[in-house]
Image (cartoon, rainbow, N blue to C red; front, side):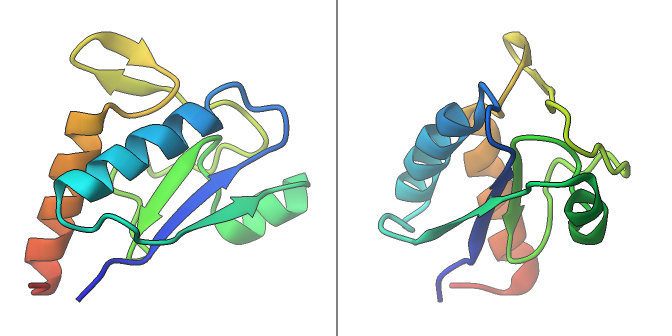
Length: 109
């Protein structure tokens, strides 16, 4: 069974492409290489609220934001605490762990 992956971002976000690259690496590391990533551009504050957008970039795996901060960030940059300090995208290791955790919790594989 494969995971459903969504990358939410706003135009001009300086980190969404880094997040996409790291996400592809994490998907490959978890046996999910080739899994399509739905790119979802958030264009207005209203669409950000409607989507529960927590800032750019946000990642959802099987509908869950594994880095949920319980806030709706609107059209703002999102920052992630990583082992190397604060960054604009989760690390490959963080994404890999999140995918494995969510797959295990959902009974995948």
